[in-house]
Length: 205
Length: 322
Image (cartoon, rainbow over all chains, first blue to last red; front, side):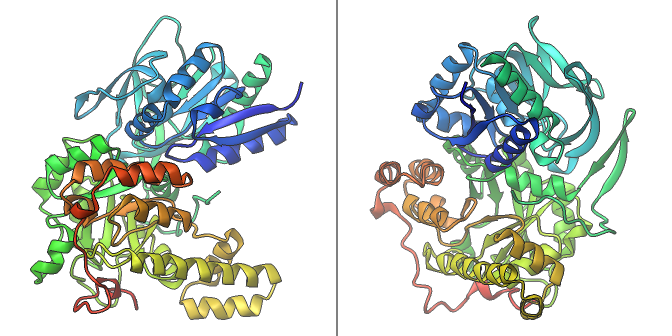
């Protein structure tokens, strides 16, 4: 088997941080692979795994819809490609979204992760916070959670595993090949979640 | 990757709290600079009303900046330009889901505190408004809310970062619809970055110390910046951007994203233009896509703009020596 081909959706948001973190995770695990920016639909079919990064979910969703990437990504995930959605990325993966202040949202979504998300659940930027959290279920007992205008999960379907909670709010989930987090592992120097994701991709290939 | 560290040791903006059994921190550099990282490759649009804010959000703006007059109207009106009406800022915060920014006057600590209490997501200490202190900018480490500041060159940018700015933008010449000054400013910054990086790479510590004295910032910050070869925070282009091609051009010069002031809502085709500028910012590497974006607008509906050579008021000079 040749190396893994991992893509980071590069429409808008903190793309380079995820590329760097994934490359470091590959290196520490001693797994061969490449990590590239993905902007156009024709780049998607070759991927073994994908990260949808943090940013503004409305922007990433609309632009991916306009250029045809959204449909390609959806088909690829449905065919089993592992995907990690971070903050805005998790919102994009979900089926239903509301905003804490504005209410139910009608924004382009991948409609795959069977959860309802509340955007800006902890408040505005001044309420953003860092806290230690745990993802015991996937073998990461301690992790620094960086929550920036973060969403939380308010309803989960029956196939959704809860991986992490912060003060009773669900902040990380897993549904088959899909992982979603409210917080930003790429803004810490802890590689453990990206390593877990890379291992998930490897086990599928 | 751009580092997220850089707190001063006695930063009053960091708050330690308990939520349930969790010990949390707010206002750290990671959180402040992190918000700017989430805006990368996006367009921040100046707006004055709820309707404009919604048009901006629908067009794909990554954030809106609330003013009470667009920069070109500030220029026409003269007099003293101050922070926007809090009521309008709040109405906009209640009607869009993207981050909301607002401007305070340079050095006006209390306008900034009022904006922080209003809960805006980022404060722009801006030369578009009339400066309140010619000698000092705000000491931004005292705030939990992140700040963005304008700069025309590397020295200004690093001095603002040293004061706690979580994000930098070029100043350009606001309210002119003329991109020339923004182009000059980003090129200045890039040239100076290349210069300090080559000094750093050559190992000439004495020359790097001399550069730090020239730039009037600490040696440590110059050394960190030189080793990175870029500004240690996210850097957007601003000032005079009016068309998709303007935005795409500034992205090719290495900017992380775009602020559009008067360029959208002073044009007669605001809605199409807002969408077109977003497309051009996202797909700036692809001239065909930028052409498609440019086709969405009508040059006859662009704001007329001003020649920056003979301006009576150069907003970019405000606060530049401090």
